[in-house]
Image (cartoon, rainbow, N blue to C red; front, side, top):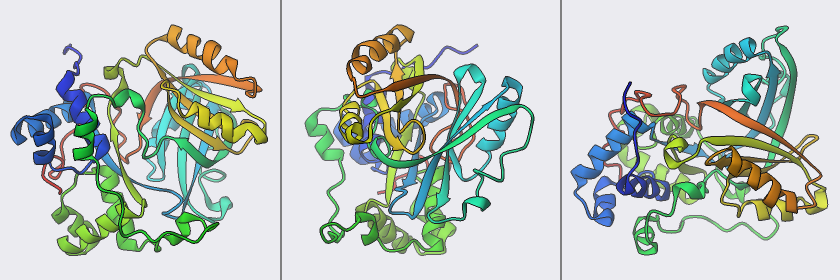
Length: 354
């Protein structure tokens, strides 16, 4: 059995750089890290093949006209495994996780805004089987941490000066909406070609302009302009998938909390500053706040729950669901994350995209 991949300082710097700009040319990353372009390219490919690293382009749901639902499915262990694999294969799911010792599946389901609920997976497409004991769906109302904001445990490898050189310039093509107007309404509607572009980037965020042109029917120059426009407006952002166990995480848990509505915003904002959390979001349902905790071991999770969360009296109830396995992350690939996952680099995965 192969030895587990171990991240060094260079790996951590590269991961941090890709979080700042997932499509940054290797030459620019190399200049900031003080190595050759070839060194960055080789290490990137090694991280892809041995650490499950992948850059994915993701739409902002509000600006892309989508809604997101957190779906919880309680089932017997045998049923949960089979159902989880079927959910992984769906193009409208992400973050398929087995929790609670393998007796629950939690996944994010993406649906067009305003779609008829009776035609969605939430009510129609979950297999009717005796092994499923409960199903609940929670609309994601607001994300306080997550999405474009990376977990702090993946950051910190680069100096402030290095980060300035790698952070894309602020958007210049956005039109500021009038006061009181939803910023998402300022974005132009997505075309079918835009959807094809986003689908390709969700598979590999570093896909080159030529490949994106083939996927959309646009010219490479048009792809470059539209890609820049989508990023400027915040409709498109880039995330990095990597096995967090390589960063010292051995214990993950989803935290379902009930908070009085008047206190929800304040509590969620405070939680978004906690280094142990990678996601904080407001939802509908009996619990109205969900968080994703990443800890080095069970003792650290216990300390977090009792010392930090326990001190917040506004949290009326707390349910902790340990994450057993992530079968699908933010991208479309069903390949599990982790060293030795044999993720193959696509033709555009290691090329210059800037």
